[in-house]
Image (tube, rainbow, N blue to C red; front, side, top):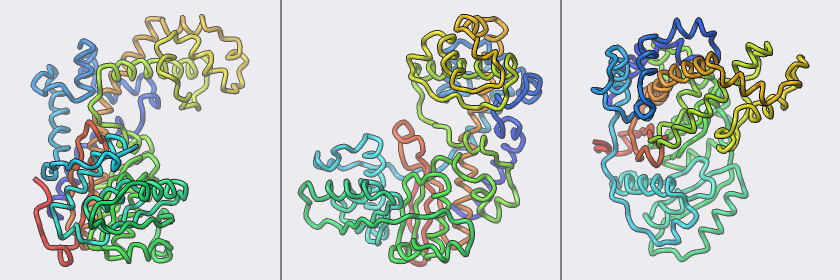
Length: 436
């Protein structure tokens, strides 16, 4: 991938997302009914409203073939998104069979991620023989498996000593194969870097200087940005980062890292970053039905608070167990409202029957239905927003001397956050083909 390609994709993503800023920058709960009708195309909502539940699920889960979409402008919208989110994938990986104890207590998701990365490095000796480090390694599954069974030298860094102690016990508990790599656990904290001065003074800087290549497998929020900045500052030969939890980022200082992104900026908000974080896994039918029920209950509480009690400052009412959502709304809402100290004494006198009656009314159900359909439209903008953030990071690496790629590494059904930003110094690491 060339620097020009990163810039072009950023520009295309910007042009598309800018048009829909009013939709992705705020949630449906933040708008009045009148304003929602203005910013969400009504022909789209009407089209979705006449679809059977199974087809709504397919649209939300990205299982619906584009040719089956019956509303042309909505079809064009989805088609443009489909084109914008196409990225290169790494070459298919044939995973090795490891001893059973190698993956004891390691989730299927983590096994898939670690072995996929191990095979990727194995296929490229110019990477395999580097001094590697894992940022936020926890108990060290990545370093242990890649070090012991693929002969790579690894340092795993984490701020939680208890996790590292658990990892060391696991490392020493089972027999090691012949010719393992060296594995080291180092306690350390990678701080949030907001300035060049902080970068130069960071105590973690020497750890980066001692290693050739750093991996951040799902670095949370601003940690991903700090990882890339530190790798550049230490002039590492390469870096691989998987971002997650974008909603924890500061929308002012952790976005628009590259010079080019600053020429095509988006007005990011906490709600936009939360939307970028939204899972992109292959949603099952049952999971979809539960989500629909959860949204109905939450929308109804919001509407009741806002319109009946005059309260509009409460956003979250907290999660509940799935079985509570399949029960009646009245008892659920009564329990939730009891947790808040409202100035109005009216809320303390509400009965479950009154709340259930509000929920069951045709007016409330109609509004809930419309808000849900509007959100089905909004949710489709999550992946383009995420790719804007990741493409910006790749452009940032290019501007700082790294040949960079935005690559799909993992199977989405196992690891929804499956896109890695990969950068190498081609003067130090020979040029090779890393993707299909």
